[in-house]
Image (cartoon, rainbow, N blue to C red; front, top):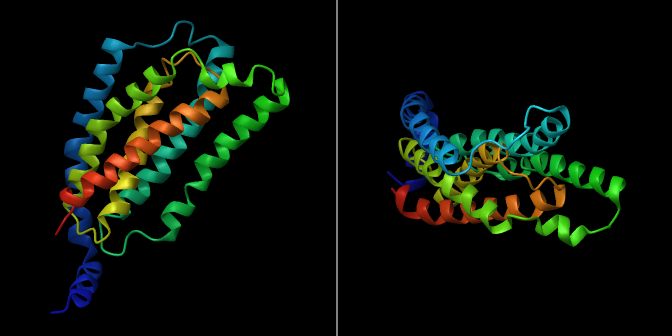
Amino acid sequence: MRTDDFIKALAADRTIERHAVARALLLAAPLAAAFSALWFLGLEGVRAGIATPDTLAIVARKLAFTGSLALVAGFFALRAARPQGVDGRAFAALVLPLAVLAYMVARETAAFGMVDWRARMMGEFSWRCTLSIVLMAAPLLAALLWAQSKGAPDQPVGAGALAGLAATGLAASIYALHCTDDSALFVLLWYVLAGALAAAAGALAARRALAW
């Protein structure tokens, strides 16, 4: 059987494949999420005053970005576990979380202009933020790659990159509960940098982890 025919046959038989991926994800994801959450609570912890209305509104805006990234990238990362599962729609859909982030930046710029923009962008804990998100994303990325491997992804690099972005969205959602650098410009630089690093790591790891 030719490779193209084999891929088409796998693509046609999606029920078994979806069940295998779902079982793997249900097994691995809670363990990975628990590890990341415990690591976060042990080393970081929830920020003080998070229940106050002003702080809660700030955290909610960050979660709108990180949560939408986790949902969109996660959906397409799981879809990528089947043959021909990575296409232009997967990356086009990432416009949604980017639009949320763009709105945050525009709203902040309208309120403060360019006053102290560099200080707001650099924040107080820039590299600590990026490193924390990437480290918390690592077990989540491993869980997603393992779940993807139970399917039949034929585009491992794209699948791994999507898994890295999904893991970043989840990890950044946890970290946002601690982060006191509240500028949208900070999120634009350092959260996005964490996502780029995790996506690159996922793409590189997937070349081996998802190889047929």
